[in-house]
Length: 403
Image (cartoon, rainbow, N blue to C red; front, side):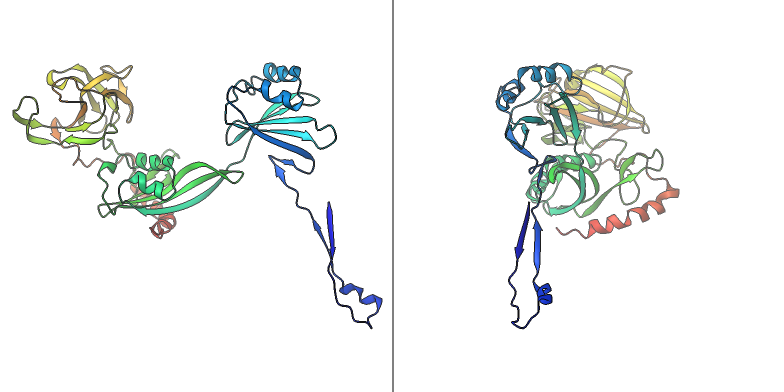
């Protein structure tokens, strides 16, 4: 539709007809709008939300679609999409002809934020899944920690998924149960959008976490060894260590490493060469590093226990007071870092559910909370100069983020 408008212009009385060029005529074309790629000029577009216990057989007949068409969609296109798998609260669109018949032409079901099931209802009944393009934007944020990392991220409008990504990234480096007030973070990350709607976070490109006055950087970088992307600090050391900082998600540390501790049950002073992590029974326990299991079974006051000999140096870890072992966990089995091996319990001499975690190097017990663990697969020394140059721009951008 064309809209025309003549703007009034003062014309001198003595002007000749050739002066009518001073009259300006503007033609404005009405903007054409689209919904899910369909022009609202050419089609009538209705939308709705799938209700509880509603199926395709409930929705389509309301728009004049017969049951034989619904049967074809249901029986002939299961390899594309099973129409029984439409769920309450999902959105759908009905595309109708913009004429006197107003026939239903297409039915669109929003399977996910990136996938739309398109059911063609006229002529040759057909079905296809259209994948929507994802737009990625780089976002920046920063803030101070006042109570917890979680709250600080949420207060800044960041997502729980991003909090978890950061926590996992620093799993080898920082104990987030020990964050201090005035610790702070700065982050550059990917935000994903479909049709202008935010659908989630992508990769973290760079992070700075300042803990107790110390800077902990992490940069997403392609490994020169296997061409996969990993995270490294500003010196080219991998963010992954040979051992995780803790073997579980715990509530608190109930007892620390000591050469002389009053045992809560025997009431005798004796060494406690481990760290007790208080956690509910059933909490997953993971191997803190790659290695091979050398013992699985009961061991007196230690209750159900697992020992692992690690591939890094002469290192052995022990996991005590377990409630049960993970499937397939037995002596001689190799395990990977982060793999579930058991669940927290209170077997043996124990006053409540917790994990007693111990580390031995060259046969000598060491304090897990004070151990400096080397990085896994750092940037080779011959390539560190190039690495530092490559990350310099994003590091500068990260440093300049306001808190």
